[in-house]
Image (cartoon, helix red, strand yellow):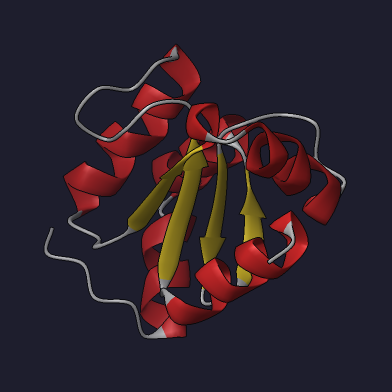
Length: 108
């Protein structure tokens, strides 16, 4: 399976997907850590993909969206953005509203 096909499958099969450096338990960069903290704070279930485990996925996710940085977050198959966008959306309340509008459960 190509990296593009694998990414398509992952973002289609999961409500929320975070492509990140490291894992939610052990993020390998500050930006990935910030997004994990935000998602954990609002209580969203999400799948994560450690791009450090697979160089094809690491480059593939950048090509998939024409977005040069990691982390990247998808909600219901839609690319939302990276750390700065997620952080701003969280601070303004837009992130929680997006999750609600897309039918994604949060606990906080």
